[in-house]
Image 1 (spheres, rainbow, N blue to C red):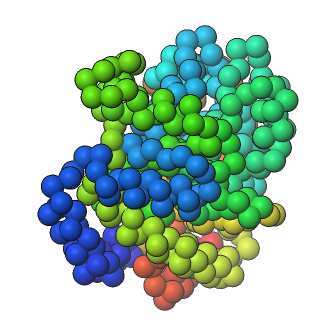
Image 2 (spheres, rainbow, N blue to C red):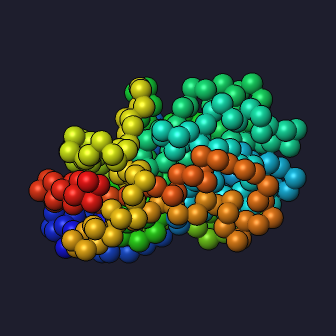
Amino acid sequence: MISFMDLTREYEFLKLELNESLQETLSSGYYIMGPALKEFEKNFSRYIGTRYASGVNSGSDALFLALKSLGIGKNDEVITVAHTFISTADAIVLNGARPVWVDIEPDSYLIDPERVVEKITPHTRALLVVHLYGQPAEMDKLNEICQEHDLYLIEDASQAHGAEYKGSKVGSLGDVSCFSFYPTKNLGGYGDGGMVLTKHREVQEKIRNLRDYGQQKKNLHTKIGINSRLDEIQATILSLKLKYLDSWNKKRRKLARIYHDQLTPGVRTPQEKENRKHVYHLYVINAPQRDLIQRELFKNGIESRIHYPTPVHKQPAYLPWRDSYLPCTEQVPKGILSLPLYPWLKEEEVNRICEVIDHASM
């Protein structure tokens, strides 16, 4: 059996060091908003290259609070993509704003900068960019558009921990960025977690206020906030794992290269764009015979996934915003398939996966 993701292999590697760190945190008596969170916020903001960072309960909360901190709400529009995890769009709607869909590029599945300007209206407040599957979007062009039209640029970097655009880490390229630390991410905890990063002090102050019941100080509630705080246990785990992130991403890229080299020409492999460092949170192929390939993988004990089978604008919950025809977004899910790829996957397992796919593609 080759699992799509096997976190037990990671735990075996980290076990002794992790248990020691957790014991120290448990013995401290601080479990919420303590020194472990402060340390992780400092280390992660330094790693990404931003001035401020706030740990929150999840990547979904990070997106929600990022938009809320920018004052985005009723009658506002936020431009984004429909080929993404639904949390990207949920954050817009939950703030009372309207998602405006832009199609994706056919080779990268990332937001198409050439389609953004035509969707801007007097109600547009922000562009919410997704660095999908671990590859950065075209940030220079998108930044130019936002500056020209006075829009906020928000990065959904939930799948791109350590990815780089022209030598800079994603998450440092917009006004605000959001990360998820769901266990399967390149940097994942052992539960839910998220982070909001920014270079703007006033945004940081609003995030800190909103994540803690709207408290400016103890028992003084100046805003309607929520309870969204990254706990000490997760912060401890993430601080430990952060020091391995670059080496783990390097391993992901090495395994991706094996897939690149061995898969049949009939299967379209991910294309790493110029001046970008892809960290392969997901390794997504595209093939006309996708369903046959997935069945053959299953017969041979190999798990695979489809990310994402139904675009957000086609989901039943998004019927009120189903006002766009997105040809590439609607075509891509018919052929994509995510293959196993994580740092603990063995090279011989990747070789076996390629053999099965090549046999199914003949």
